Amino acid sequence: MKIGVALSGGGIRGIAHAGVLQALEDYHIPINIIGGTSAGSMIASLYAMGYSPYVIYLLCQRNAERIVRENNFSFMKRFFSFQSKGNDRLTGMKDGKMIEEIYDRLAERKQITSISQIKMPLVIPAVDIMKSKEYVFTNYLPKKAVDEKQYITDISIGKAVRASSSFPAVFNPCYVNSHAFMDGGMLDNVPVYEVKKQGADKVLAVKFDADKIDENSNFMDIGMKTIDIMGNKIAEENLEMSDYVLSVYTDKCGLLDVDKLDQCYQYGYESVQKNIKQIKQIFLNDI
Image 1 (tube, helix red, strand yellow):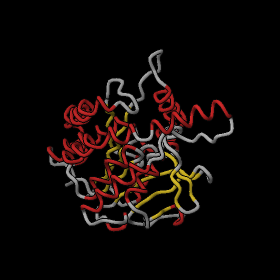
Image 2: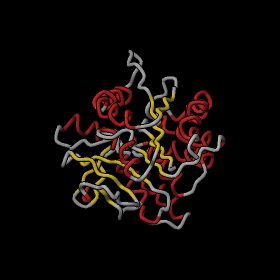
Image 3: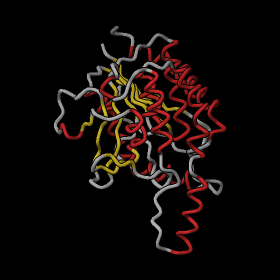
């Protein structure tokens, strides 16, 4: 039996996925196929390349601050220019190039230059905002692919992760040939269906429940809540396809709240611990 894991988007909360993967390993639950959207793609891609969950956690600690702070001064300069002149095109706070550079460098350490070189089946959704269509970066074309053009197998890990993680208003679109990719969470925040199409017999879906919006919420929190609302119905359909949905509580961790990395990792680990009896019953009974 092949076990698949589908990791949702969630900004900095995504580090909790590394905690989930570490706990699954500690409880001897094998993972044969993995997929992730946005922040989930960051964790899923590293795991598929062979990085251990704890090393992924350390890498996120080392690089999260750099990604979050990237180009903030440039953004403020463009923002005030836009306000005063009214003719400057405002796209996002960050261009996302640092994400691409970091992940390409981590891939190179594993002697990987293209997603097609990864051995573990991997799926990373993104949305082309020009065509209003979902595309999937993967190393294996599904046998039951209805539209083969929907799948892209010739792309670097850095570009794929950057495309899936380009959260609207925070990051610029990621341009690949004729595509303008933005955050995959707009159409497929928990890629259960795509993981199943890769041959998974059972799929564990990992998601975050959006926090309530109050007077202390910033525009990034509101943007995240908006995406959660818009994609709610699609997410429900995907989650219904999974064999178990693991909800991770992250105690009001903001979209870019790097100070809560350690807590989120622990939340992910503890969520598996609390539900391990049910998880074992579902995913180990046929092995």
